[in-house]
Image 1 (cartoon, one colour):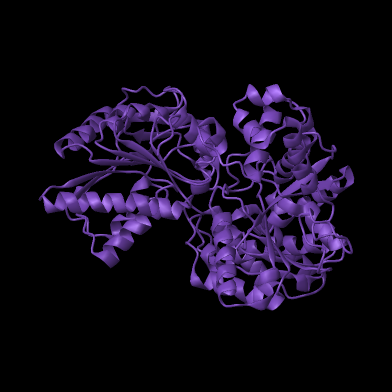
Image 2 (cartoon, rainbow, N blue to C red; image 1 turned 90 degrees about the horizontal axis):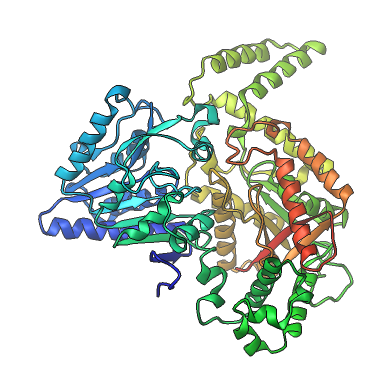
Length: 632
């Protein structure tokens, strides 16, 4: 049932994969219905990270279930400008790489704006593009994604509801968000050709997809007022539009975030905690200071009816918050504390920290990492990927130059390293913006990151046999775009887990990583654990899994199940550990929309968590790292 606060219907799926599967099924149904009547099916297509799984599923339907695209005509929303269509980053290349090269669509039925149109003739070509859509009978089904600022296509905030196909200047937020395609923002085109909002609204049906960290803008788009400052909100005026989102992207919808405002609510302990914490933060009060009237005046009278006295509710939530704070992330030895986040036994524990990139361990949970080791646990770090694309070219020549000088200093023959240095300098000097690194250069970049990771482990106190470099194959494409999780990725991870038989696992539960590596790494760990459990591995029933967030986000305060406080000295020690990753300082390739260095992001996030706990009435700490337990 669609909630009354949602002015556009929203379907929420557990994952982006299942949501994409739904959209693919709707497209397939439409294609077959039109084909049965001897009609063509006209589809409006989107690009970017959002529809990739959709196109994978359409290709599967074509190959395995005989879905034919012979009667399909497509029109793409947009294209960068200026850009040659054969360049890797062009949307022409994107669509052929992900969809058109793998299905039986007729080439003449594919329509994509041309990023090479002469600028003085753009208006003419845009008008012709619209006429082609009209001649095809209009778009039967338009697929959309949504930007963090609410843009649809490249219709940025401020775009008119009547806007047509045109050349536009890209919002800086959009350009920053798309740096993962271009290595750095200076190479992202400043303009694009896009169908207008007026064109989009003419489609007979619209399906907008949103995954991951889009929850705030999706809530604004479907629950807020119609405004040109949030272009997606204008879709409220379409009579057949549906948003298809995954669980994280739907998290800020009122029926999910504050279901007590929408009608019936099941008052579980977690729901009570969320309601009371949100109320306290909204009123700028500590939990124990909330009054009977505070509940009544903020739509929580049903909670009072069910649970009784306001102060008793306050105490219940206060204890949940208090009991999540611990200085013993591996459990306190010799103590029986039923409300402690972790078990006391066994002690010491074997702990595995899965780090998607070679620095996520220290950035995301460096204080906890050090505390686990200092408290006597056997800590291992599994670096899941090489991280080799996130190293600037300058580091390659700097380190080879060092190798040449080192060999010369100690009388070692350096002809080979000198030749490698010369070749690397020449290749980098002539490297095109869309040209991948050579295998040799990628290997050197991987070595740089591996050495930094090992140095971090030594800094914490680990011996090198506790560092495990998995180099999962899905990552090793040499390009920004990675493969989906593969069988070999899972087998590598299962082998390590069988070898170590950990009592405790930490992994990145962050899905906001701008190029998706964290998400795939998490899927690999989850699938490995499911298989090991199904195989009846005896150790796995005693293995607990804790999820941390990456550099981009933190858990909502009401979700946190274990919070590890840090003193000012521990904050500084973590900072110095992050500094070891020199290749990731300053302007890092593919760092997403946040221009702060990783140590700054980590400190700001950890301090904010501590401040929120203090605002709710807990002890004030300098910083806190937060975790949520995953049950399997």
